[in-house]
Image 1 (cartoon, rainbow, N blue to C red):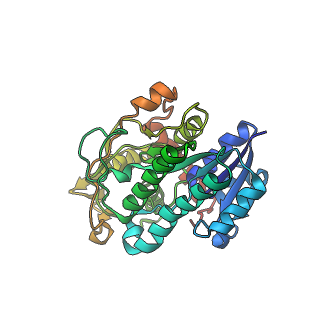
Image 2: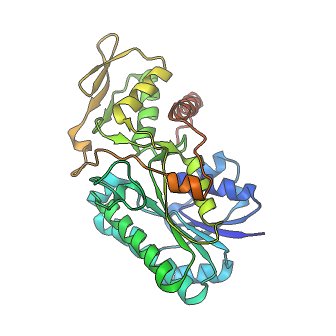
Image 3: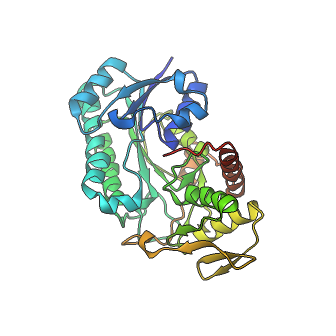
Length: 338
């Protein structure tokens, strides 16, 4: 039985990855911050919380990490822990940098010094491309991050590459484009939209959003965590872009959700009104980023060829799933605090 340590296991990706690894007969250990408490609702919703051994680990404390790895001796480590909300990174740049950058260094140092046989996965992000220099973006596209989050992730990405090349470690990064699901955090725009529109449908509460003009490459988290696992099953470590290759404007994602809910609407610029002239969505300038990322679309040809990976979900099926689950949550008055 293989053993895997997943940092950030209580998040969206950690939950889907844990479910995948358990289905492949792994023993799964989940690292969480001490202040996480009992926030395991995603894992409980999937019915797998009792199959995971939880560990309190602070990525900024090297001894803490080393002790955990000593006790577990995992075959694979998936580092999904991060301060991952881009807008918040502008308000908390120091915390973002410490967690997303030095945390990776601390893990890699333990592997280098004591357990070079452990396979390591680093969660990189399309936000590293930022103000893109070419379209679509692939593994050789130059990084131009536009947020403290993107900068911290670029550091961690290059650090992973450096440790692989310097110390011959099996360390790889998945440069994942936007990936969503019904268990996405409410602070992320896709879940904010699905939850907000369901709430408007029931209460009339206006949904406030920021920039609706940017384009993103949206996939399903379930597909993307499969790519993570595939990377660590290869004979040689490498880095891969994981994406659908389809761009969608935020405004069009809103349209798909409105249509799925059978809401009659009209757009006035970037604001949305119902058929009676009442606001459904208003734009709030305070929700704009100081530096916007206008267009992200990935080229995952390398992953398709080398990993034999293909996304199974479409954006339409993702929207249907997210709306369906959101409606059920509202009906049950079981709206989770994230």
